[in-house]
Image (tube, rainbow, N blue to C red; front, side, top):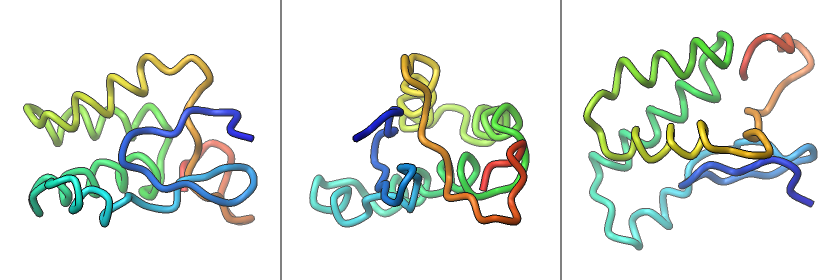
Length: 100
């Protein structure tokens, strides 16, 4: 059962449902070019992999990917989420105040 929203282009697994990467093969099949796929991957690394608070991660994405259409699409999805967004996979060592 999916309790939180899964952002566009993301693969999710585990319990609780967590980010495990982007759907690169699906993006390639849909005709996304390599640069756009790299941008999507970089955005999600900032959101789900780099350490820091969720707010810091969103601020990094807002600043580092200005003008990128996929940045706008991803952030719009996050801002309009009704259920909240899935988290990155958290290991036992990861604090609740950090994204994994």
